[in-house]
Amino acid sequence: MKYVIWLVIALAVVVWFQRTKKNIINKSRSASGDPTGGAGGGAHPSSLSGASPPVEEMVACAHCGLHFPASEAVTDYAGTVFCGEEHRRLHAH
Ligand SMILES: [Zn+2]
Image 1 (cartoon, rainbow, N blue to C red):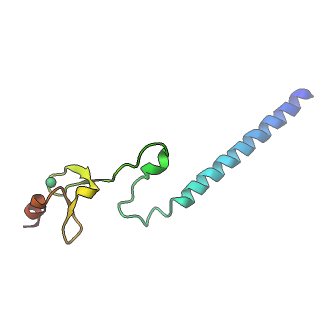
Image 2 (cartoon, rainbow, N blue to C red):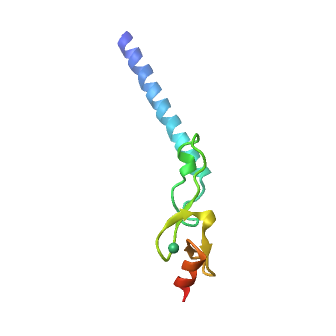
Image 3 (cartoon, protein in one colour):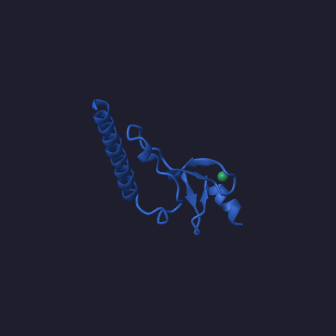
């Protein structure tokens, strides 16, 4: 009889744990917003690990394909990203 009681308790713990896990997943999904709204539409590296420092977004030059931080990007009127003023000019002509 004692065995059955422990079995019921274990089952209740498993059910409670899975319900809690589901709630956490739902919360994180609603907090990150709709996936269709963002430009680029990639993963959220900041949400994966809270301990790591913020990673700067990397973009690729449309002319040579070089990857570099978005803060160093040069963009043309259409919003195309280039690694420098020279490549923007070379690509535009
Ligand atoms: Zn380039």
